[in-house]
Length: 214
Image 1 (cartoon, rainbow, N blue to C red):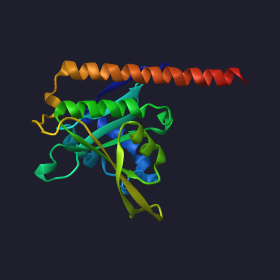
Image 2: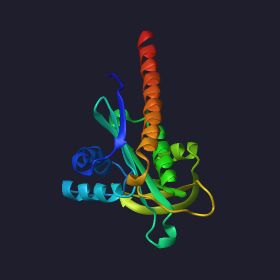
Image 3: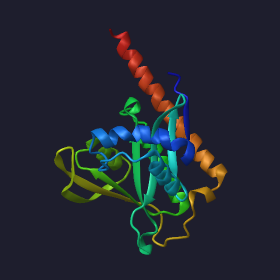
Image 4: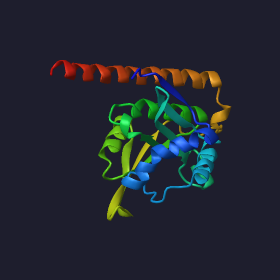
């Protein structure tokens, strides 16, 4: 494992099948998502395309392998909610629990702020303690609990709502992600890639240290 990191915006037609493959185990084996039926490739491609028209849909690749993705979408439909975004992140099992999600999520928030979004929301299954802790580290606060609201895998699950606010009190004009300065987006991506590469180096060093103790 060389740890070559690439972060980029998704290309819906080309990338949707790989994203769906990463997402499938979450649908079939966990309550992290409440989706219960795996969408078809066509349905999922249309979903990615619709989101990516306005919002960042970020992919994390390590040594050419899709390791995770993060994206945002509208939090609610009424016009007064235009400056709100609901965020999501998924990592492949092979790359989870290494601290890689935080930098990717932070990049997503920075790009959303550049677009003009002010309120960030996360809707998290109550048993997903790792995600809740990550959001708290990143400045989100718990604002609500829906008890026993989702039934999946033979049991009821709570949902925790979390919120972080950025920007001023007066909302400005929103711009789609494609209208952001490519140079500015590129700088943010390079910063994130460097941060993730450093985390991978630390993880690799810790692994080598454990082997040296045997």
